[in-house]
Length: 517
Image (cartoon, rainbow, N blue to C red):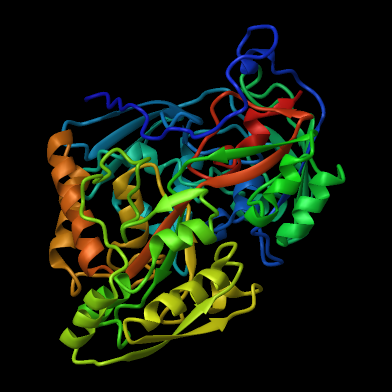
């Protein structure tokens, strides 16, 4: 067996400061006590403790790093570390992986954690009728074998050098075997916090577990309270009036109000969060690659960064791989605003003009409707008439995304290239929001499988560079910008010098990593 060790892939943009007044790192001064109150977006009345359904911040933060644990965890610095797994080894072809599990861990109901729980928790995602975005990850496992109570072995259908990273996916939480339905109903995990109350789409309250295996290293609050506040203005007001201690996704237009308050600090993190306009490539006219190319050259990316992000981000190039990824193709030619080139591709598609609808809502990302209108204005010069359809925020992800042919969307990005590509661009996966597949690019799909099993970094870089080039030219997504995470925290709360940039709010693990100042 070969032990796989990889350096972190992510870097953080902004943090609370390296040293405190004493000269000690802030983390060294962390102390137990207090109550973390956070107002978070992304909540729905249909929310539950079934991680297969989780898709936005409120439930991700409530579950992962709070009530439940994964086998592995991506640290704030991007390095991978064990959570319920302590170590892992792979065969040289990265096809068979053996994980050693943490001993002495119990679920909140007293049941001991072990290999049976791992297997049962992962099998949930491939159960008949299960709808899980992590299904492709688990489908790649051809055998799960219990070696001992605290050791489990996975055999994959093909080698995957990133497999340990994938097990940190927020859908792949650990539940007690034989009691999964009860655990979903009540929120029973092995996490730092035990559920006291949960009102879907409204609020979650949990208290710190005594004698937890992370004692001394994480979980410093006595209690956490997450309040569902989907409206940006309401979240900001809740912070400014002292009703909560932290909020995600601030309205950039009102950032000055927060900065003017001496009791609040802005936390900005450079990341791979991407604001996108996916097209269903199996629906006309988006099934024509020349129409897709025309739309890529009909958008003014820098204008969007300036006016929608107010400079808090950077221009995108129609590929989800950004500077925070290891194999980002930094030298790839940039798709830029060029109405004449857009007209050329329309002509190649046999069109002199194009009339299309673009669905948008603030649910997709803050400023999505304004962004769609900017797109509408820039596309006119290319003979493309975009009708912006303003969709209601409620039900956007169930009624519009994956259903309407052209819409606004956002992705948080992923820690590895394969994780991102296999989540959104592999043929047949549930969250492939462009329906991109082998018919669109056989080469892309072949490279996806080949790069996944390749252990030589130089060869992987070549493959992932070519895949980014294919998506930039032929793919079904217009990705005009990467947006920084911009969130706000009360000075009552302290955090480590590094803040995670994989998800909002320190990889959604603020309950685990922050403490009372």
